[in-house]
Image (cartoon, rainbow, N blue to C red; front, side):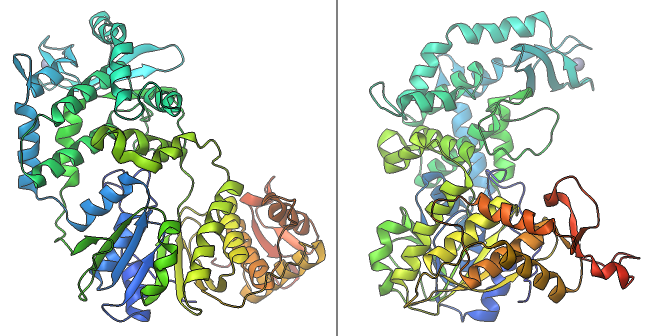
Length: 533
Ligand SMILES: [Zn+2]
């Protein structure tokens, strides 16, 4: 299988730190080889807006299903990027909105006022630094016109200002929750836990902005821009910004030991620049309206299962998508953000995500298997399915390949490159498929691993050995017993690797960090110098 090369992945776009880092150009390269322009492609995940839009730009008619309203908004923004002029005008409208006698901008900036340690001028801080264990304000970051600034120690005045916001905090929090989960809502306690990842000052500032939303009279496009700026700020001002790490990728709601409390108004200003791209808009519609034959995006507002029975009506030439990974932080915050942007009703069934407590690979495999089963059941046999698995790790690979195998997708190839680069997985939908299930026998696993290394003829990092072993298991119908978990795959592989026939060239304490070779290669003098992977 060829590996489709891509360019850089987007680490700056909206909410990029939660989205799969997908190199640009891979979708286009696959489509150029497999699909003619105007053909229908199904993206059943909607997990990576940029990937879906790239397919549409390449001339495909892409039906993308997305149950997360935040993902749908990101798709909308990627398909139809706001112009710089509209974003600037949206910011100006927010700035000019009133809070009592003040402009909203002045009011919000005043929340973060501090004094320059050098020239004693008053100015808004960019961030305050908090030690989450002691709960103390320890530092601040600002840039003064006198040239002083950067990271400085917090003063008693800074602490006093911050303490003001803690006093009225309960009321502000209760209001901020009202838009996502009213008092009687069973999901309220979990929404409350998510809101705990916002400092008191941010809760007040965001609440003030959200309250102005309904009063602002403006065009539809300006309003869309205002919502986009707010969404950017929602993520920029939570406590999931460890200091001094530059680009964290949060997956769970865990308070960093030192976090930045970022200035809300400055986040809105930064959003203008961040949300602006040079990409021209593409055609995009809401299901069931079809995009033009020249290509475009059709967004289905819901999970694939709600659309499954209608899938056979569309002549899909391919299924393509970036495989989602469980992300408790993003999914929980998405429910909160959707409530803030569109209100309680608009969050709809997606709010159930708040009730979800399990985010492990076994749960994920079950969810993926259910999704894949809709594809095998409702699409004709032989439709190619190209999946991109980003940030590969053993549990993720096991979950995906196991789920696909159990759902009856035929694995037709797996392409891999660097250890950090996405796996490219090729399946085909299949019919009349019987669920053969051979046990994960140690002898069989041993043979598979030997075969992989012998065929490749070169030492492999564990992650690649794991991926290739899981593909072999899928092709041969080998799976853990129904009462076992995905961990049975790891156990089988690790146990087999203990055989003296295999050598870890790096001699690591755990097999998963090693680079594996056949011991017999030692005698052939293959290890000096080490071959390129
Ligand atoms: Zn100064």
